[in-house]
Image (cartoon, rainbow, N blue to C red; front, side, top):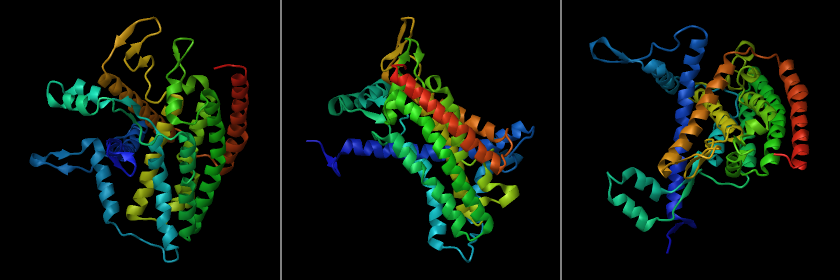
Length: 398
């Protein structure tokens, strides 16, 4: 009889608990990497060195700077030990709660995103450890011959709707932080953030409706599987090929949702100091800023998953490559899984780089320009894209 924990198969429970921890750690590590690359990438664009002074001293006059990454550790340490200033007139509960509304959605939403396909431990470990740990393949063959799992924490059949629902909570973090600080600059930042994020969410949702109509699904797993299929026998059905306009609309709206340049009006330093988190200091300010970097990673993950096939590699099937010209290349299960994970992470890194490139290449919009772009350009284009997509799908296209 299978052992269970809270009605769940014990093996599955511990597998997905471990997987959730790994993905949670991945998001935090990527956030740290983004905070480092933000400085180094901007330095390269501006023809300077960037962060390189903070270092760990070594014997014989040497120092360990790790290309400036130690500077991030120094900043984190500074934020942890500096004074935690609290305004006297704030609502203490809301003031502290706002941080979680801003921080949690990006980390929680990634739970429904698949990082690779189905993993079969018996085949995976047999391929890797047959020579080094002889008893391990026999253990899996005897105890878990049919056990498999997806590299996805939560397999929800409404995964895309879950992402929208959880992601929508993010706006509450900015609004509550701005209101509870009882600071006119914070309040202005919160109001700007609310207007901006709600405005661009409309265009973002309409852009993704085209994806839903094409693949006839809101399950993230099935969306990735649909992009693994081929059009005309050779072209992967990635969202970028079937919905190119939706890709640009989604990318622009996602940058606006992230409140990054050129859409950083809610925290414009030259106008309203730091916007909605002006009255936050120390570790709390660090969490607000770190949440922004994690959101960069999440936007890159969403672009990868919805428009670039997620973990899929062109012409790679469960048993290896099947090329359009008829050739095949058999691969082990371990090789297929590694290629899928590498494909996913490579795409995410590329779009993280692209988002930071945009941030350091474009000037900030005026607020009237920001609203004009959202309501008079992106929204009509999103509606037009949706109408054309519906017509093509109704006529039997795609």
